[in-house]
Length: 265
Image (tube, rainbow, N blue to C red; front, side, top):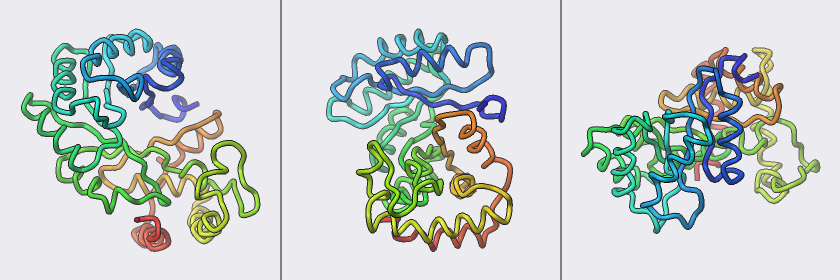
């Protein structure tokens, strides 16, 4: 369904389901023109030096000879950023990686990675961090500004705040599973989201769109931000893609900005 709706970028990681996610994505993407992003390492305990071997393993699972975007999943005391970026650059030179990205990096860590890659003549393509109307810390912790300064795309994960911005959950109607322990789905946290959802519904209603589509569009309107929403079924995939079919006015963007100021810190 995602392919049918024009979506061509798919993000996964070596760590997801012990490599099974890469394997399944490779199977589904076979024969289609898509961009695939994946991530190193396989565990939080991995060290820098295993990256070349793990990249080869990811490529084998994906059934590809090159990956479009290869990302460092999270900073770690076990991984030297300059040394890892040097290995990433080697992979680019070898034709195994087309673009290098990072994930969950601070502004300072981004600058270290950017400088290390620049010494090899390679740009830092992206930093994948949590960003949504209900998680606006990239605007205040320096990450968004660093992305603009360095020409790096901010890839926004959890752009619908784990479903809190879909309108599916109401106060007194807590979800099951891990979401029931998250702040947006508990007590005052859930109550605080109510006026945000009311505004999303109002804006969505004027366009016959959904609140989730408006929440995604708010991110898309930012010139260097690319949201990557998840989808559990074809209906959700099609709805996510619908965020590409309209624009928000400046007044609507500013209204959403003002309604979610509390989530900047």
